[in-house]
Length: 168
Image 1 (tube, one colour):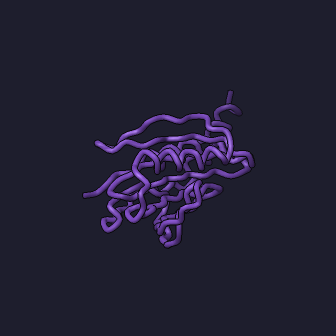
Image 2 (cartoon, one colour):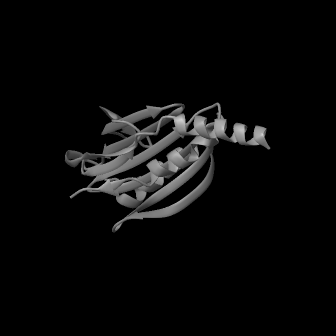
Image 3 (cartoon, helix red, strand yellow):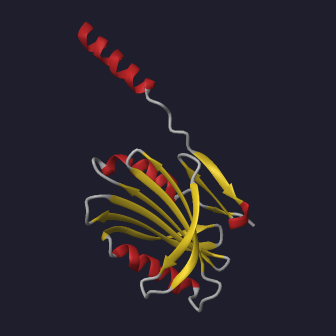
């Protein structure tokens, strides 16, 4: 009995000694969104490519922690004829090429609708994705957990996936 209590005390002290994840909401008023990241995301610009090969300018917001990468891409579709439904469907199609789609459901942020996906990728990693179209921009949140244990990051991936909020 004494050994069990000692072992329990050691396990509890190790658990409590782990550093807390410093998740916080980061707001980007110029990009019209806020989202939770585990640390301040690095920002960059580049392109977003549709499955049909259309390249549009995009901003990327990336944070990494342990074996997980959290990416929010904001693609500017204002100069294209790609409409909301087609843009969202195209992004869903693109992620479907990474592996097996385990979950594909409609999602909403206030009056804006989009899609949420969960994937078992071909390389053994896991991904969760949220795709929304707002103000002529496609917003794609992609949480990607790599080996050794991608399932262990599930709670953090879902937290990221659910964190997007549009700003006026």
